[in-house]
Length: 154
Image 1 (tube, one colour):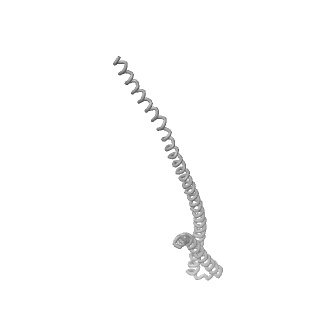
Image 2 (image 1 turned 90 degrees about the vertical axis):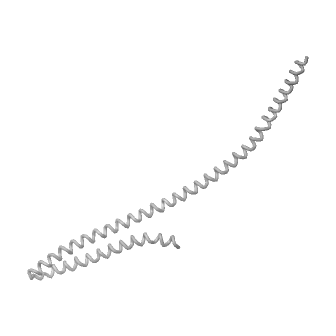
Image 3 (image 1 turned 60 degrees about the vertical axis):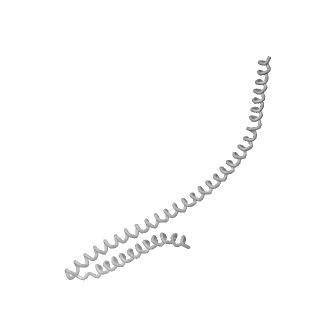
């Protein structure tokens, strides 16, 4: 009989432990679910904030990129203009050298040719104009580079 009583008490103790375990299981996850739900909500809110900041950063980057592209286009146009002016200057200088050589030969031969003198003067004036135009184009390029720097300081 003592064996039966002992088994009954052991069985009763085991059932009590099982009941306590079930109580913990039933109450535990619900509490955890509420905590997890709050954590999930906080993470979703943080994620939404980060996505908003990322979108703002992308828009800012796109704006900067567009500004840089416009600036590069303007610089390329200025460089093309400057290159054209330098090519004109080279052509003018080549013509001036040619006419000056002809004028020098005419002077050595003591043949004063008014047409040759006129050509020499026109070539010299053309060279001066081309040089001035090249300098203006170069100054425009320098000023366009300095302007953003000055505006940033203000």
